[in-house]
Amino acid sequence: MSETLLRVDNLKVHFPLGGGLFAADAGVLKAVDGVSLNLAPGRTLGLVGESGCGKSTLARALTGMVSVTSGEIVFEDNTIRHDRSASWKALRRDVQMIFQDPLASLDPRMTVGQIVAEPLRHLRPDLGRADRRRRVAAMIERVGLSQSQINRYPHEFSGGQCQRIGIARALVVEPKVLICDEPVSALDVSIQAKIVELLQQLQAEFGIAILFIAHDLAVVRQISDEVMVMYLGRVMERAPSNTLFERPAHPYTRALLSAVPRPDPELERRRRRIALSGELPSPADPPSGCVFRTRCPWAQVDCAAQTPALRAFGGESHVACLHAEAVARDRLAATG
Image 1 (cartoon, rainbow, N blue to C red):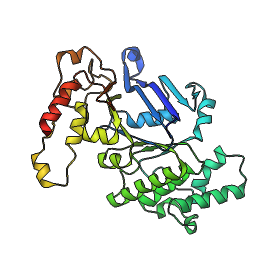
Image 2: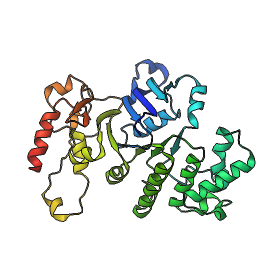
Image 3: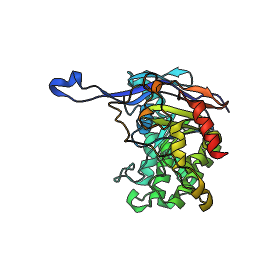
Image 4: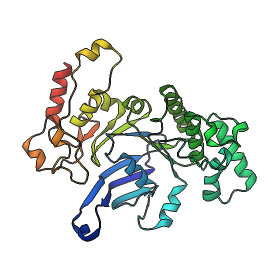
């Protein structure tokens, strides 16, 4: 499958800063600043970047949980009107979300059965009580839980089981897009692998498109068909998963990958790490030109004056870097 389900063009989410007497001069925080992406059925787009780069804000913008400043969101050729709640309501059944903290995302006063049934009551009012009960029971079993657990409460489950409940809640309405915001970061490594495997199985079964947000690059590589790298609200690079991990084109991507430890001690000793200088700038006051230039080992004078657009590079990649060719030559020299 290659048709686009969800298309995002130049999306921006800006938050006004300050308040009171001088509110007009307080400026804005550019959490998401011109992001474009496509999600297709049966495909997974991985989204990576440091904390504060805008990943979670982007996820919430795609579900209407935060207001969009500008840009276009198109679902199945229907443009979502940012200023109309009815437009978002029509999208809510087809675009569901899984959250980072499994237990905190579940209502402690509700049983598992009530939690999983809640989306059906709001988004599928055409279903009767018996139909809802059958769908809930089937989905609970599909995510690896037992029907005997249906009347238990969230605190009676482990973190991995709570995340399975969250997955069941998201998928019970049969969405077409699933947005996973750090869904395994709060889990043990062994449990992470099982949850990722479950998501892959469910994707193959239902043909859903997935936006998978994570810090763990190994997990992202395992589950993603394509990967997008964000920094200070902007996309630095987008490429097929294997291409990005084997031939990173942007300096920031190279720095992220160089920080990932390798299991081979000999390779770990010989490889060159890329140390980023300085602190992460504030999205309320980003650098001029390329937002990454203040920490980039390959920065030139023109990087401060010109904002690089995301352009095709190396056949499969898209990179927002004025000097991607020089970075690629350096990468080849380092590996050769």
